Amino acid sequence: MPESAAPAPCLGGLVPFSTVDWPGKLAAVVFVAGCPWRCHYCHNPVLQERSPVIEWEQVYGLLSRRRGLLDGVVFSGGEPCSDATLPWMIDAVRALGYKVGLHTAGIYPRQLQGLLDRLDWVGLDVKSLPAGYAALTGRRYSSAPVWTSLELLLNWGGDFECRTTWSPNWLKESELLDLAQELAHRGVQNYAVQGYREAAVAVTDMPSTATQEALRCLFPTWQWR
Image 1 (cartoon, rainbow, N blue to C red):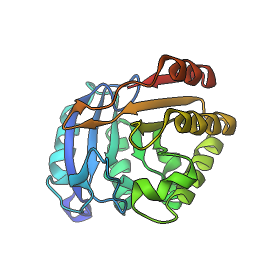
Image 2 (image 1 turned 90 degrees about the vertical axis):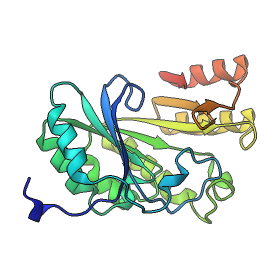
Image 3 (image 1 turned 120 degrees about the vertical axis):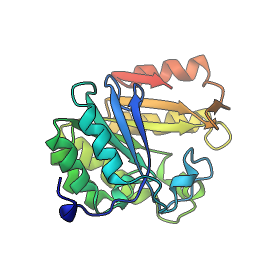
């Protein structure tokens, strides 16, 4: 890959091997730094600012050496769609023979729409019903792009899941069920609820058995993580 052709992505880290970031796949995870939201429970707050800690050449070199050992590469964040070089990075990874997944909070639906032809899987973070978004993200009107992004994924026809990071401290079980019912009504097939973690330690109890059973009945595929 000629250095003269390489833009400068803002990368916040790399996990060489993961079994949890793309369901059913062995993947490397590339973390893109930068996010306009300030969710108080963000598990990667150091990635909110655009502060690079690793060079693309390092990432590309590792991925080149791991061909045949991994199923794919996931771009996560931060919010990966905030980086203008993301399409270029995806194309470079696909040229190595990898499938490509994306974690996104749905903040930039226009950018997401332009990427869908390049993607094999998307994990969309859906935090709450629209009325609860501003309190979680610290940004007014933050819900609208998320639900636009969801409609794009529903019309895409590709493989995706919705996921919600849950704690009763900011989302009652009844509110979680309301959100899940809305997602199911819109046609979401795969839904995951993730317990809130701090410094890799779970600080959220699982939802009640009744809530879990209700969630299980709403979707063909439901998981607690």
